[in-house]
Length: 166
Image (spheres, rainbow, N blue to C red):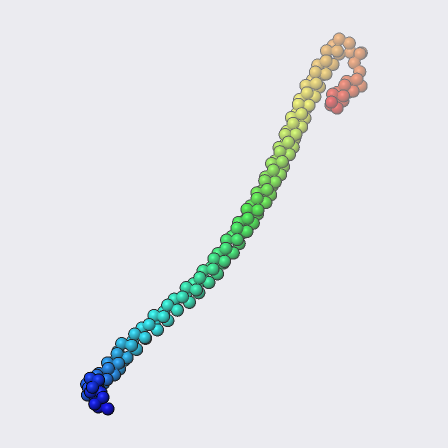
């Protein structure tokens, strides 16, 4: 068989050394290149996988936050509408109260004016009565001077009482 291999041009010693070199290079490459390269590839694929999972989780959280934000916006809108309604109601109540106070002030001013008018009328009446009494007195004096028998005390009292009633 050696002859056959020699005729084919195969040298056993050279072939054996080449096979040993091949296995040594294979072992060296396996431990120093292939395993670290596989390790780096696995780490990168793991990082990519984690990144995709985190992106997916971030998308889910973003949707949740977006839903929460929409809910908060709706709540804020509803609250602002309630605040506006309450403010409108309070302003209407305040307007009614102010109108009522103004009406009460007007009524009070009218009463005060009526009281002042009554006082002034009473003062004027007293003044007129006092002046009328004096005029009657002067008229009596004049009539007494003219015809004392025509004066009747009852007529004078009646005239003065009629003036007081007016």
